[in-house]
Image 1 (spheres, helix red, strand yellow):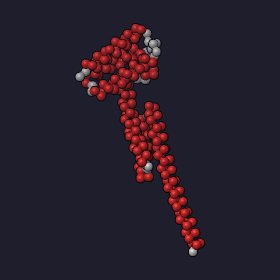
Image 2 (cartoon, one colour):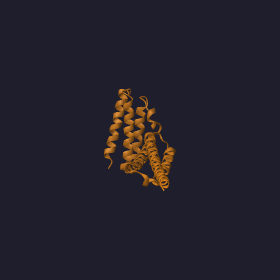
Image 3 (tube, helix red, strand yellow):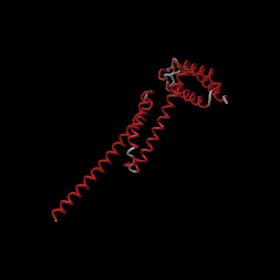
Length: 194
């Protein structure tokens, strides 16, 4: 009888150990999968400015696959992981909106600046030509722009101004005067638009 009780005790302890091991392993696996997802979102956030449309499309597909897998395991999440998972999903949504905004600005920059759309190629020799091209585009198109289009145009204008400032005073004084006149014209057109 004592031998049977000892065997039963050993079986119960072994089963308890195995159950605990499985639980710890499942918890560790869930934590591992969640950490991978967090790192993946962080990586996409870091790379956002360098992703092509194809890259972003693939990232969105990956997001769907990853979240479907994690959604099926949410009952195994701790409260902390549930909250952080929700935040990460929201963050990816914000990244998507930011990516779409960046693409819209880049496309609009190409429309307004043409050959000067690659801002890194603007230098002291062609900065006046870039502003001139920008203002020619604005003059001929601005009459029916919505507030959203003006917002995109403002972003391109700010990028162009930032690029000019990065030239660190290499712009000739007479060119700087021409640029200031074009900047004032832009401000006047924008302010006059209802």
